[in-house]
Image (cartoon, rainbow, N blue to C red; front, top):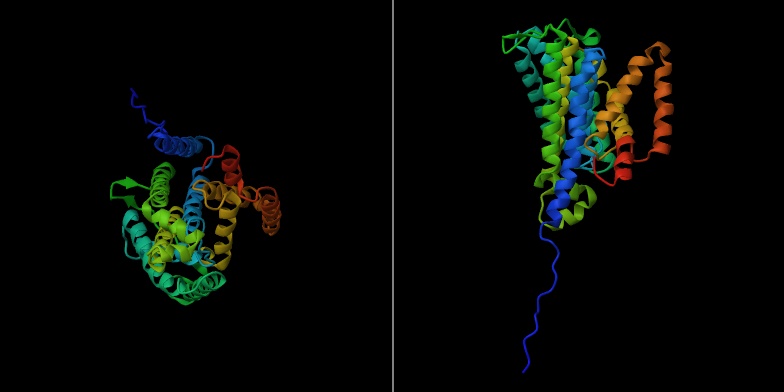
Length: 330
């Protein structure tokens, strides 16, 4: 008499992928915790205004990285969002007398609206043509900022009042202002984190890898790219509006094409396509500008030499190389 043999076969643990994802997320959470702890402790040892400048440019670089690192779109005109939001925020705070939170919000909205228009024009082309359109639009914004009366021309908008947050907290105190900038930076960073790990972010990365395949799967790639462009513009504007309140100044420097080059440098130096890379890149560039200021015009040459060395030695960027060594995303 034949007895039925067991047909059960060994199966892989159902929760293996979940455990792998959880491990990756915990790794990112630790890195995020280290970054937060650093910016909380740093004011005890470093000048707060310098740290606020680092956080503003770090948010700017993260916004740019969202576009190029995760969307594959290279913009040579991102300074127009940083500078235009700075002018709008400064004008709203100084002339209209808005409180700082409303001035920052107004500047961010202006950058978003500019991003909607610029994105609608730029995404019609790809590659170098896309980059050239953004550069041309940025130059138009620069010359507008130079000629418009409310921007103050070459002098910019000076003496912007920091005011009182919600009419209660005086931002004349450096630590109060630092707390606001820290909150804005962390909020912007977490928003980018959420976007990157959302279904929208996954589709965006698929478009970056192979746009034709994403189109064949039924995705409206132009709509996704336009939305990514607007998100990046809004976050860059948030950084610019906050920076204008911090330094009580909005000038042509923030809307000049060289600022668009600096943010590319920050992103590549830190690690394009990584979440924490732009933060590290911004910290390195701002530190060099601050501590090598006594070299005068030679600062630019020193930056160029360091950039060339880093590109040759760390092709993935500082954080990119660390992530590759750890075999985990950062």
